[in-house]
Length: 114
Image (cartoon, rainbow, N blue to C red; front, side, top):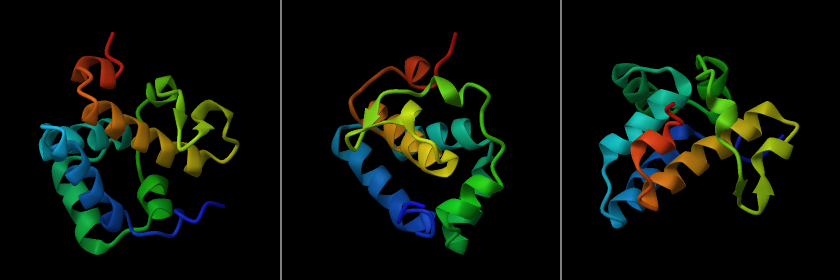
């Protein structure tokens, strides 16, 4: 169990947005990667932020993208694909996607298209 499991998604979401905006990217791009990963629409995403949903509940009710397993690599010094805990892996996948947006990677590559 990660210390992030019971942290409200709403506490981290503004940090994701601030991170990408500092690099010249947009909140809409953060929303795009979050909705791609979780299957939530914009209204559902806004509800989770407003309700203070924990990461655990956020991902338990998500319809994870079938291509989510293609999000691999190292985040916070840990290889995502080596994580045994699925919740922790999903949180790290989201971190990785946001990092890729902030680094200026094209959205087609971030979203593992084609």
